[in-house]
Length: 192
Image (tube, rainbow, N blue to C red; front, side, top):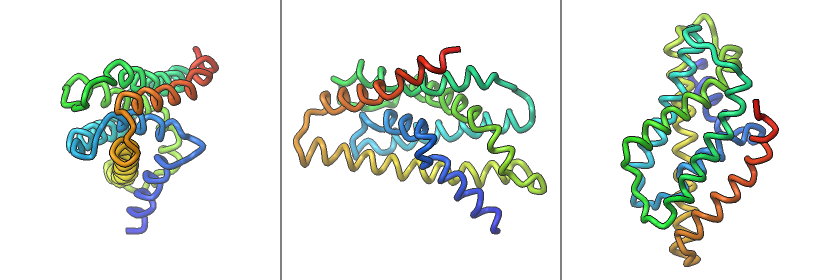
């Protein structure tokens, strides 16, 4: 039982690691356009990301797929920037992301981010324990942390739009621009 809580805690802290803020930036970009009444489609996207993240950990742990760390380290900030650019393109819309393409892209971005973490996961997992249980417990921690972050982003958007009276389009454009501004030097630095 202690392994369960340890892995859940490690999954939770993986998302909230300020040194690896890429996870936080991706989820902020993913959640940004949603309003509190759109929590269901957002929850589906968060879960798609977790599934993709977990699939890549499975594929890497079983040595089914080996991906160049150079490309993964480059694609992680690119995936975040792509999400922010997508937000900017569709900022005018009242947001409902029920689009299946967005779900598949989010799943793919989860795969990319998971491959970036696969080496560390192999170090922390208990080889005495079945792989499926380690992954499940770790994924539960990731999902919980992402749901908390999603709820905080929905609350922040609610405050900005409903309490402070900011314009939705401006809110999405400004925050997405800040995210891209943070990522551009990282993308240039990691260019393969």
